[in-house]
Length: 230
Image: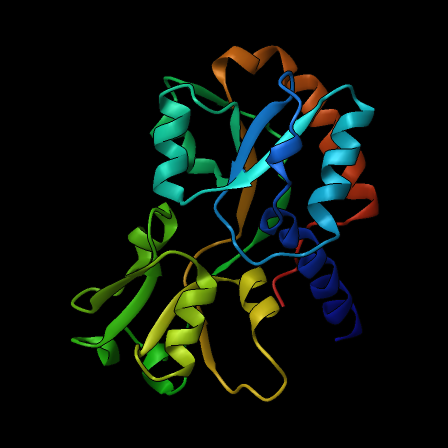
């Protein structure tokens, strides 16, 4: 259990990496422009990741856009890459982007609820279930015959769940750990195998793959980003 708590604290730090924005108003024109689709904001991880990239000669700015919008922007060549997309995302952007093979963070997909309805797809038939717009894994595991309620981010979905406006929420383990409090009581069920979150780069930046991979490996030594699933 102690190891589990330690790993989750690391996970909390690490997937917060996808959760932080940089100030682009003072952006350098020669920096790579990356996006993330997470909104929970922390003042620790993304700066440390950007700092590590800089050590490898990689100037990076990170801004937040929705998952759907990010895909469109990378397809149009308007951004240089995306942070924290799953391995299968390459199927969506294979003509325009490449994946940095070293994952940044890892976790699982959950369905959570305030009652035992979250324990079975059958109990969720006809019930409203929140899912974040544009995330492939959530579309794949959405309970059959439930009513989809689209939200822009996990925080909004979690607020709806706590207010009783939806019966369940699809969310990754790390975001769930960040949002839940000691007083919250939820049922949860894992609905995916372990998922890894990667950096995707527009094809024009493919020459930078080795540098980004080396930087991510080095960054993870200080911010372990794996989960043992507990």
